[in-house]
Length: 150
Image (tube, one colour):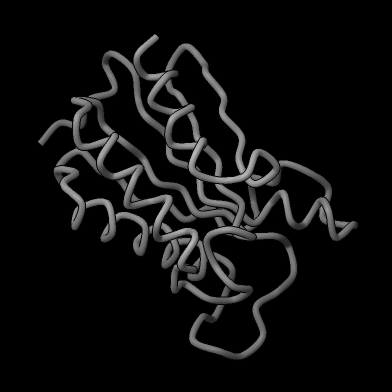
């Protein structure tokens, strides 16, 4: 379908191992690893992440659907720096993505920002590979009935 195609197009701007695409009854999700988007403990986008998300903004701007940007971290506690917790870091990363999408034509009224910290892992946090899977940004394109009310 059109949303699935849009999600695959967004994911196509990154290496396959840095993305995942899932299609459910309620939403289409594009997951982007922080290996491509953010340095450890930071909310500033990498050049590769910025380029991929600028392209994503162009694709999302053409869709009428509401979009939720979710930030996720691994379970390693934040030590020092600007963020007092993984919750703050995950929310700051999601906000960075939303600001970039708005700057690239996505209507801000269609966007939601959610920071989940480390409470929704994709894998166990006891290996470097598992932690890497958990550090991610997810772009969730909501299907019918998922429009934001305003």
